[in-house]
Length: 213
Length: 147
Image (cartoon, rainbow over all chains, first blue to last red; front, side, top):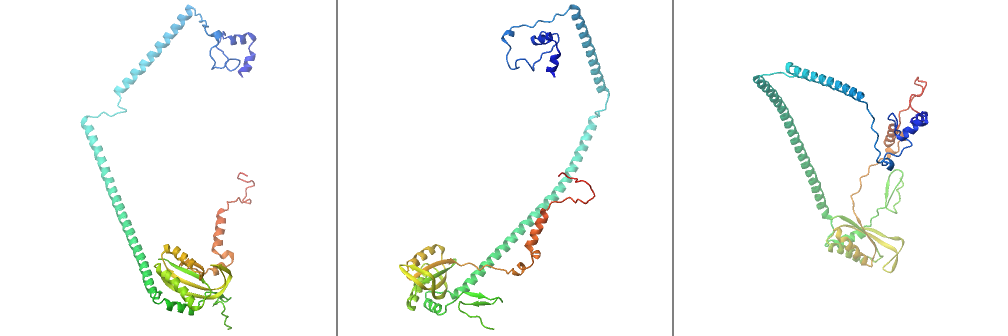
């Protein structure tokens, strides 16, 4: 856009823009210029820009306008400040003026309300804590009972097993009855093979023939 | 002490020698602090294949089992001792375990598939996975969702 606008200027304007001695503050920095981060060119290092000449009457006129403006602004500000102070002194819109006795009474009232709230919450808290305590006691008792039952069951199972083993131990083979046990075993060969027919009957033994019924 | 079962395959021997072999084995168990619960004679039978043990080839053998209780640490000693006995062809020690409880479910398995519980569960899962589908004859003349 600026490039397009740039082409509208005549040659002398462009030349003036390049040198920086233009009448209006227009300096193209995007195109045809050194990058911003480069230092000042050596040839422009000690150049002092020429100060614009101001005529005497222009200067006095500008000073007059400036003084007018400053005086008017100061007077407005002073008026507004005085108005605020006056407002604060006369109005009671944002605060209530109380005597010390009234203040004390107000404070006492607040304390009473606070104490009442605290008492109410304390009752609730007591109730809640008591309930929690009860629940905890019940829970612990339940767990203890469960553990006792578990232990009893375990002991019962162990006792059962011990009784069973003691009962079994009557048929254990010892050194004394070893010969007799071997004789008995050799005399009674066992056969764990079996067959099942379609009716679900078990036929034990390897050489047993099914009974013809 | 856990219960074990010693399965012995013994060389074919006359009866007195067979008795002495079994007695030797039982004494070894007793010496290691074991308890013998039961003897079982499974009979003399042809081996399934010829077995070469202690330099002799065996084709027939006597099968015998001893159920005993012993400390687990003594088992390797027992195995070593039985391995040195030239009358014992094979020896294996198995741990005796409680028989598993089986419940017959054949009746349920023989039902038609749609009556079986596992099949019904599978159908439920498939139904849960089905996405809601737009019904085209619901009155709108365009598809209201993104294709």
